[in-house]
Length: 65
Image (cartoon, helix red, strand yellow):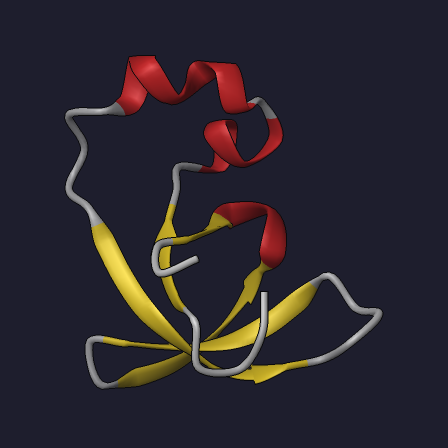
């Protein structure tokens, strides 16, 4: 994951247990843009809905990669 990546914000459960993705497929999909990636840290800044949010990388899934 790097600055400029388009990411999907996944459910907190799915972030820790990828196999649960099937259970939460019908949720509203939130997509954002990584505007700042802190190498070595587990969080990054994501632009979503006009706001910059500090989100854990475990809750992000790269869409354009």
